[in-house]
Amino acid sequence: MLIDAHAHLDFEAFDEDREEVIKKCQDQQVKVINVGSQLATSKLAVSLAQKYEGLFATIGLHPIHVYDEEFKVEDYQKIIGTNKNIVGIGECGYDYFYLKEKDKSFIEIKAKQEEVFLKHIQLAKDNSLPLMLHGRNGETQKTANIDIIQALVDNDCHQGLIHCFDGTKEEADSYIQQGFYIGITGIITFTRKAEALQELVRQLPLDKMIINTDSPYLTPEPHRGKRNEPVYVEFIARQVAELKGISYDEVVKENAINCKKVFNI
Image 1: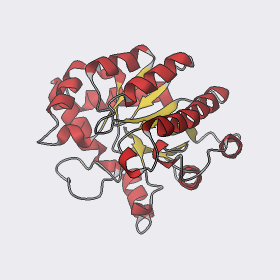
Image 2: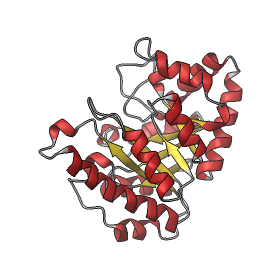
Image 3: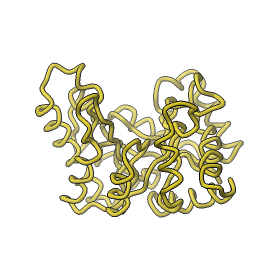
Image 4: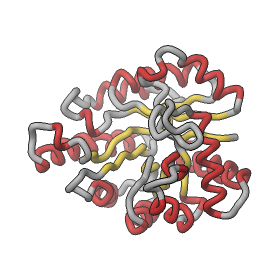
C-alpha cells in the first residue's frame, strides 16, 4: 500500500472538494498523514483522521507561524488525549526562507523559532511520538538543517522525519545518524534544478527514505502546475525506483516499512 507521509488536506486548498480527494485516496489505497501547521489545521487533521479510514494526523505549529499564534503546549496535549490517530508532533523546526518578510532580526526570529521548536521536542518525548520536521534555508541563512540537527542531538531526540529534505548529503547523513528518516517529494521529478536531489536519492539507502507529497504544494510531473494531491505520491515512488534502478513495488514496500517504524502505521 502506498503511504503519503506528509500532506495538508487540512488546508483551505481542499475546502471545496476535500471528501472527493479523500475518496480518491481510499479508492487507490493510499494512506495519508495529514500535518497540522497551526492549532486550527491540527484540529482539522485530527478530525479527518477520526472520520476517515486510512488517514492519520500530526499536530504542531509551523515555524513560519510562531509570530501568528502562541504555541500553548496544554492545547496540543489536550488534543492528543488518548487519540490513536495522532502519529506525530509537528511540523516543527526552523524556516529562514521568509525572514525578509519579518520586521525582526535573524537572531530574534531564530530565538523565537527555537523556543517553539524545543516545546515541540518535549511534547513529542512526553507522549512517545515522533517529530515531523521542517527545515528551509533562506537566501543568506543556510543553516536550517544544521540547527535542527543540533537541537535533536542536544535534546536526545531520535525518531521522526525531516520532510521535503533539500539539504546536503552530509546533513542527510547526520539526520540518519540521529535516527531520522529523509523525506523525498515530487521535486525529484522536476526536469530542472533537481539534479542534486536526484543524486542524493541515488546515494541514500532506501531503508532511510520516506516519500511524501506535501500536498497541495510541490506537484510532481506529469501534473506539475496543478494542485498536488496525495495520490500523486505514486509518481514520486516511480521516480525513486528509476533513480535507484529498482522496482516500483520495492519502493512502495520499503516506504510502508519505514512509515511503520517511524509513525506506527
